[in-house]
Length: 192
Image (tube, rainbow, N blue to C red):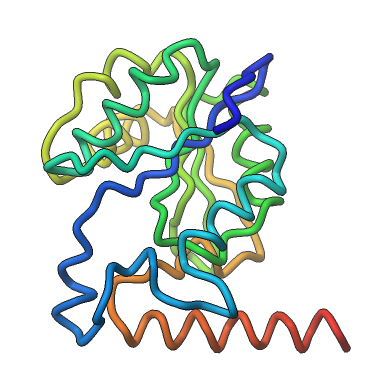
C-alpha cells in the first residue's frame, strides 16, 4: 500500500464485501478472485490504481457493511488531504479517471464524481473536510448519504469522462462476462 500522501488524495479500495450476489448468480469463488483477462478482478483494479501514481489503501478486513469499511479506511489514512472511494469490483476504471477526480479535489472541490453517458459512477472523491463524517459512517449505504447532502448543497463536482469502467462493477457472473468483453474490445482498439 502506497500511503505517501504529499498533497494527493488517497484511493480507498474497498474489498471487504462478501460477494454474495456473485455466488448466488453461479460464481464458484469470491468475485474479486474471479479470473478476468488473464488476471483477477482485484488485480485489474489494483493495476489501475498503481498506474495512477496516487497513494492508496486496500481495506479488506471483512467489515459488516460498506459504511463500516469506508470509515475504517478513512481512519487508517486520516492524514490524507482527501479520499477517492473505489469499490474493488470495478476492474476497468482507468487511471486517468482516478487522476481527474483527484485533480478536482486538489482544486478545492468538497466532493467529485465521474459521470459517463449520463450515469454517475466511481471513484467518488471526498475532500479532507469530509473526514469526520466519513469516519462516522456505518451500515450498508457507504458514503451515499453524505454524497446526497453534498449534492443538495451544490458542493459536488461532476466530471464527464469517456470511461465506461466507472460503471462496470462485478456483482454477477453476467457482469464478469460483460467486463471480459469490454476488456477484449479495449485490447482490439489499442492494437488497431
